[in-house]
Amino acid sequence: VVVAAYHYGSSARRRPARDIDIGLVVDRGAEHSVDVDGIAARIAARCGRPVDQLDVRVVNGADSVFLGNLMREGRRCFERDKRSRVAFEVQAMNSWLDFQPAWERLRRRVLEVWSRG
Image 1 (spheres, rainbow, N blue to C red):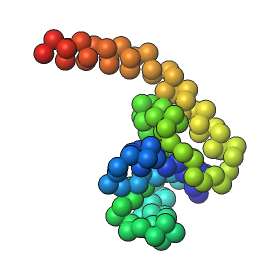
Image 2 (image 1 turned 90 degrees about the vertical axis):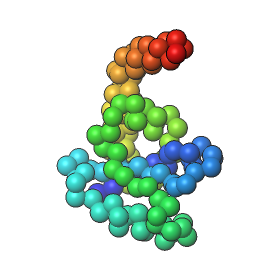
Image 3 (image 1 turned 90 degrees about the horizontal axis):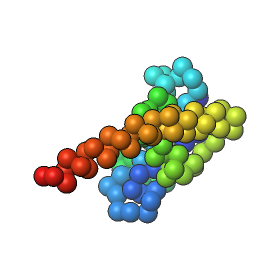
Image 4 (image 1 turned 135 degrees about the vertical axis):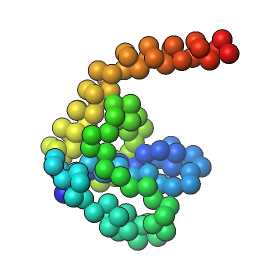
């Protein structure tokens, strides 16, 4: 069911972090049937860490900004199906690139408002 997994967030950037973020890409239609807690327990056991130090989540359908960050900064740590993984990555980057101009406009406006106090 899991197509690929990505380590992302502060710990992936080698920064102090209170948890380890793992994003799971799963087969289409399996987003709600994945045993995320079971997968987290298996990862924790293999890493020798308490399960409460892991934040494991399905990333299919995540928002464009998150997906862009995941693709830029995340590190793939598991791949079961290369074709499906590549399809996910293409979709994720296309989603971010389509949304990026609107995000940049919004970001500029927010920064302008903040700079005026």
